[in-house]
Length: 459
Image (tube, rainbow, N blue to C red; front, side, top):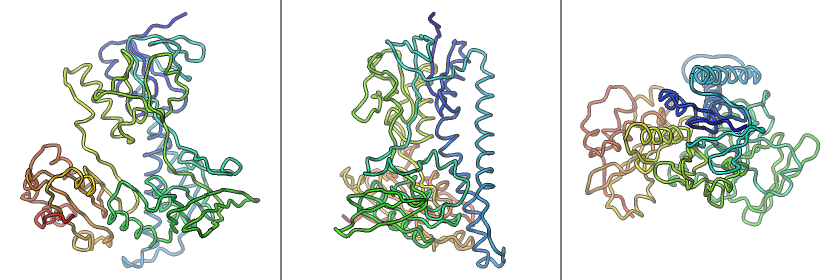
C-alpha cells in the first residue's frame, strides 16, 4: 500500500520542522521522517548541549579566578554528573518543545524510521512506502572517524558520545585541532582534566589568519592545554585503561597517554544510506548532495537543506536554507544561497566572531584593501571585566569603502561582530558604523574607533 503525501521532509533537524510549519500553514499533507532524535545535531549533541557545557566551564573558571575580583570561593569541586544533568535538562526542554511544535501541526505526520529512496520521489520507511511530489532532505551529518591505525581497537569518543560523559577525564587526548576539538579542549581543561590536542596539520584552524590562530593558541595554552602540531604517522593503541597516541613531528617520535580519546577531525554527510542513486540525486565524491543556488537537487521535486548539501556547516546556514526554500516556494521571493555572507564563531572563552573574508581571501580578490587592528587591552569594558585577551580587526575595500571581513577575538566577540555583519548586508560604507554613536562603556563602542584607524594593507 502506498501512502501519498503532498510533501515529505526527511530529517527533523534545524530546517525540517520549520519547513513543515510552512507546509502545514498551506494545508499540505506532509510527513516528516526522523530515524533518531528530534532536533538533530544542534539540539541533541551540538550547539545547545556544548554551549551549555561551555557555560558551566566558564562559571567554574571564573570561580577559580575569584581572587582577581576580590573574593574567595574556597575549594572548587566539579561534580560532572551535575554538569551533565544541567546539560541534559536544557536539551530536554528544547527537544520536548520541538516535539510539541510538530505535534501541533494538523497537516503534518511524524514518521519514525529510516527513509531510503527506492524510485524517484518514492521512499521506503521500515516497510512503509511513502510518495510525494515534493521531497525535502534535511539529513545532517556526523563525526568522521579517521583511518588511523589502531583506532578501531580502542574506545574513542566523538562530539556525540562525548555528551554521555559524566565524570571528568583524568587526561583527555583530542585528535583534531579545529573548532570542535578546541572548544572541548578548553571546557574540559576548565572542568579539571589534563588536555592534549594533536593536529596533523602544521597549524590550527587553516581558514583563519595567522594572528587569529596565534591568539587562540595563546588563550588555550595559558590555561594549560598542550598542543602538538604537524603530527605525522599517527597510531593508536590501548593497554588496560590507558590509550596511547604515537606520532612523529619533524621525524621525532612522541607518545601521549591518556584516559580518554576524542576524535574531532571533521564531519561527513548522512547520505550514504539514502538510496540517492534510485532517485537520480547527484552527490559529490564526499557524499554531499549537489544543489543549485536555491537548494534544488538534480532530481525534479527534491530539495536538500542543511549540512548534507555542503553549502554550509552550521545551524544558522541550515536555517537560512529553509528560509531560501520557503521564500521561493511560497513567497515569490527569489532568495539564494550565494546572497549570504560567511559568518561563524569559535566558542572558546573569550570567543572568536568571524564574518566575511579573511586576509588571504581579500588579498586574492585583487582589491585594494584597508585594514585596522586593535588589542582588547584598549577596550575599557574588557579591562573592567578582567577580560583583555584577544583583539578586533577589520578589512575594507579601499575603493567602495565596503566592509569585506572582520575578526573579533575577545569579550563577547561572537555577539559584537554582528554590528559589522549587518552593515555588510546593507552594503553600506564602513563610515556608516564609524560615525555611529555607541553606548559607553561597551566593547562595541570601540568598533567606530577601530574603523577610524584604517590604513592600506601591506602585502
